[in-house]
Length: 65
Figure 1 (cartoon, rainbow, N blue to C red):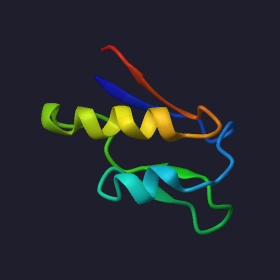
Figure 2 (cartoon, rainbow, N blue to C red):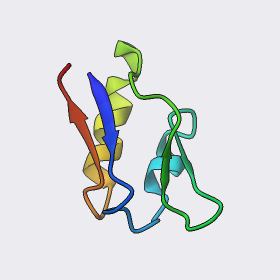
Figure 3 (cartoon, one colour):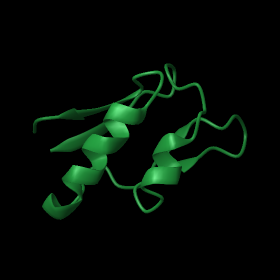
């Protein structure tokens, strides 16, 4: 699985960085999502799914390889 983060859709709420700071950061310029890890380990997928569900703008999704 691969994380997809759409900066054009992101509103900078920061839920991703708060929930999984090892996978996501926020841009210092505009607060939008910065993807740190595109392909998380299998044991982190539950956390990524929580991030996807909590993203208010729907900017973060999971894609099959």
